[in-house]
Length: 617
Image (cartoon, helix red, strand yellow):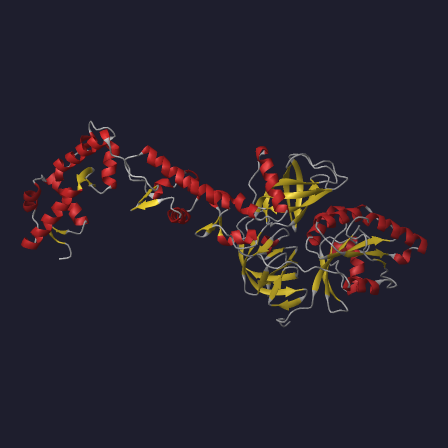
């Protein structure tokens, strides 16, 4: 089949729903001519077990892509997997039996999944008289009252005499289907996988977001895993057509290389870059009227797209009563791929009954303790109102990479330090922490000219990457709140204070350094008897008055004098012998060696056996 590069006809995904044996699969077969019960067990038992897919071209040129889902109560997970990607639904109700338990459960699930439009097929209409047909219609109208299907077309149908099939096609063609939002990372929850000879692994699903092109490099996240498997897209089909690209809302098949069939079971997700699985979901919950209250610590089954995991649910605040909505945190036994706005279903662990569902508000949520509930409620209430700045606030003092922040906010972040974005409150907190640490250093070491920048990167500021920390200092300097003194930082107006006793001790220390000359003294000998002697010695280092040789502070003026003498000797004599060096310094060999090595390090001399020659000469 040739690849289609032009735009495809408008297509939308239609799911069937309803009680077992109410004619869903037979109706799709009558509309499309395709038998969707293909598994031997399905054909033997006469029920749909796996999801079935086919397309129906409509008179307008639109394409209805059908997902036929099972109605059996023990296969609700499969039903949810199919219904999660639909744009519209055909609710099938037998005119013979009327509304049944799975009819109501499927209808409740569709409402929880946010399906907005659809129609009702009253199947097997040829098997009842007009009076029973009217009773069935009234029964269905009562069941859908107050739902998105309350005013939907209801069409009596029969696969045997063809009654209502044309009307059903026309009603499908008239369904208003809102376009899916585009953008975001590509996501395709896998609802079917098979291997085709000569092609390899093929997965199908409904693309939830983003777009994919033939040749793209993607990842497959098997259910419960966090790292994923790198794959390449060898081919793309959309609604049964071979194409070069697929996008959100399209029924998509991908031919993948680099992955095995075992890694592609239902629950797996094919995703683009930048999406990490989540284990904690802050969400809004809608609880079904007939369900018992949702209380703290409830252990439930979460079904999201094609994944199913166990979750512990913690309502924020009071228990959520039947028929109510509330906020809750879900802590999952295994990670899932989720983004804000994703819908899910919650079912009892055993017996498996649908209790409610919800919408993901924050898939990057921190774990909330009871004391955090008021703050979490305030944040999630803002998220519900569309205030995405909450994501940066909850990211904490480390901020987010710019591309991730843009993805979460829906726009480029305004506040940043280098390549990371921050909430304004965290930026202000970092700035204040920097100034506080600087003030504390000045108070603790009043004789110091100020700390080096790395000495200030502690406490809250350790959350910053080094590059972001450097930008923070640059901003503080530009704002006039910090002053640079060489490699050291100061608050404006600060200077080491040398008065009274400190000034006398400073004078004594400088005298000792000068008297020791190149001979140097141990630190304790220099500071002995001096108040705050160690701080004064540190000030000598900060001001460049001393250097450390062989563990001893040495007077920088004496070293500068030595450099001048050695250079003169090298100029006059061409070399420096050990005897000549002893003559210059008066030092023994033991104390002379550190000085000679220092001269080599300063590139004044270079060693040649026992001699020293001019560096570079």
